[in-house]
Picture 1 (cartoon, helix red, strand yellow):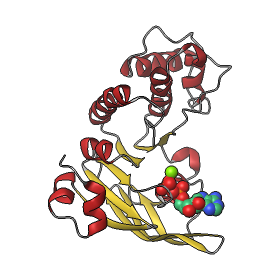
Picture 2 (spheres, helix red, strand yellow):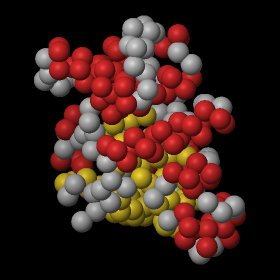
Picture 3 (spheres, protein in one colour):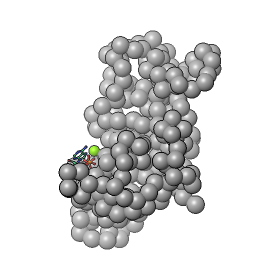
Length: 238
Ligand code: ADP
Ligand code: MG
């Protein structure tokens, strides 16, 4: 049984159908990307999985349970967005701890958890700094640390690297993928960057106008694209 199952999701905004019959099975521990041009519906899919939006049709199952039967704080989902969204008036430690606030944990355990995730993302010793005292790449690592501090079973990433320069993007890409493998967190990442998707993913769903054109491994998308749109979007070999 797949870990995350999207079955026939549809969504309409102001009479415009932005998602149509989205079907996707994600296996436990898998890293998948939603890849497509701007406006193709990638973020909407992520927001539906996260429970920020309600689908007009279809269903979402996580670990065999209908997601709407799980209260938001029991879904064990971590999020990282494009713009980091750190609290500027809080230190790195406070930012990471914020996500743990509603968990029943004593102070010492919380501090240990925060320091351990900061270690995982290479930010040991930075816990007293404020976001403005960090580089863009460091801020994004704090956002990743905050998301994984909860020990989520599912990680949702919406263009998490698009504000970084090319060199840093490549570096953090590798780090994120390594961390994701070590922790075994099932991950769905949204991107419009085909190179990013091709180098990071186990499988990629190619979206166009709210529909999945193909859901396959990078190699198969390259070798056996189902149509010209996929072929054009994939371009160079992985
Ligand atoms: P992507 O992430 O692939 O760029 P989105 O999922 O953000 O695409 O958006 C898909 C389409 O849905 C776009 O045409 C967008 O304008 C529209 N859309 C998304 N959210 C809303 C909303 N809350 N209200 C109205 N239209 C929306
Ligand atoms: Mg988007």
